[in-house]
Image (tube, rainbow, N blue to C red):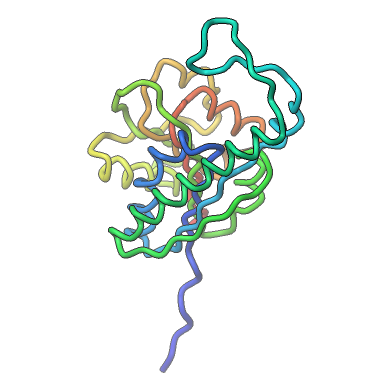
Length: 214
């Protein structure tokens, strides 16, 4: 007697730059290895940056007030450097876990790409760099105490050596502002629009995970 193979599972890792991707790569690899899922990484080219071509920006590490002209060539070079660093780190960490990982570049904002690429059974990680070296809880936004987001938060907290908490799905983004979160886990019910996802990312300032539906 034969049985049908289980549906393919994926861990999707999306980041807008290597600085954001770096801290989340290890988490994505560990989650993919533990769930026996394929790992797919995407460097997201934000169309808003292309639209800002020609604008003046403050240059990091330059004297106060110094600016650089944002050009298409400068953007291309920056994205190319990020892509090389992202793929190199991903390949190294995945190899240690004997995990095959793929990498590609796509255009779009993180919320739009995440919601557009996500399929049933996928776990999606939106990478976001932490600015403070604090280890806080893994927060799940979900109304069910034992729902998909809550279960994933518990598993991640165990992997990270911290604790998990469940807050109501409609928790406003500003309520997360004072919390030093290690990760934020969201269920489909918490994602009414890309704008809410963007607001949660900007406020939580940590990797956000979209839990599989089941």
